[in-house]
Length: 406
Ligand code: ADP
Picture 1 (tube, rainbow, N blue to C red):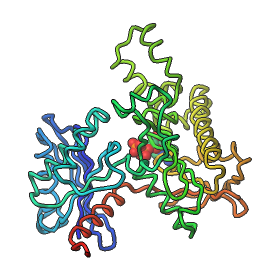
Picture 2: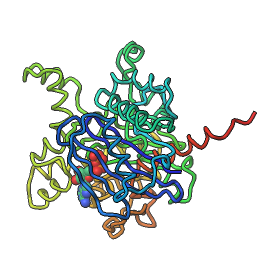
Picture 3: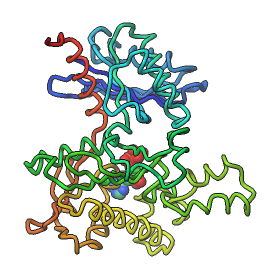
Picture 4: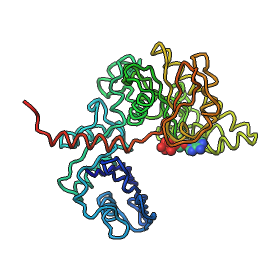
């Protein structure tokens, strides 16, 4: 079966086409600047050169049409006809409390996703446009949705409730949901496979550290707590996001600086984090480079960033009453030797012993970077959210084909 994975944003749409026999990627690409006059389509077939075109793409229906045209194109395509794509899987950021696993798209599911527009105003409406665009271009093809929040639905109330009036939870569903769930789920499974142990037997912290960043405590094979909250702003210091701060700062700053709600929101989401402290960049590579050249603000940004990762690992080790596996993933987690070293050296009392040589090795495979003697196993596991979306979609479509046994 061939499965198309789609990640639809408000003005962009990323795609990957998988052949599920062997789980190989046949092609990937993206449409950028949807809704503008010079939209860009970048198409990367696995065995052919990349192609790029600029044209007017005013909506998601046209964007999906361009994608399917590319996939079936005589010169740049990878399939002979569209009917070879037997399922489409979508990334959906917010599944609220309605979804604790991936599901096939039905009219009820679409209604539930719509109900969550308030909680994810930037993401869920765009995902719905992606789903509608596939319906328009590929009628009858089953679609599945895979939620960033679903993996964290196992958190106990003591992890997900905020200590504020309970009526706010009842009225507005204000609670911790957590994000990056697809990634935390994927890398925790991979880590258990690598170690040859059942995931249920491990006390694990997974650190997904990219532009956005979150740590998850995994106990009994399930998400027990996670650092992002009702929105992806809470938790670790990130590229441009503040992460945790005293909530009283918000009204204080609004008052002193005469900022509107939108302005303060934008400050905390887009102009804070590593960018604000370093004054240089939100990109870890540039900050590390400046730090190595002696820039004091870059060093402070790096130190604060590391400090907060350490605090979360320590907190989650305490929350689980133990830790035996620590996993790094995503852009920074997979690539920054300096970050992993700084984090691990500072929490050696937990039983973490980093092997400097293993830490410095580069590989696209899951690997251990702790010493053989280290009580806590430290792993780097490359994440692959698209593959998990393709797998879930494939599974759901296959299950739907099998008649239920009485
Ligand atoms: P996103 O959250 O947007 O998916 P990624 O997971 O791709 O982001 O992570 C992007 C981050 O990874 C950037 O801060 C970038 O600097 C960092 N990164 C990528 N490669 C390296 C590297 N070799 N060393 C340090 N940081 C890196």
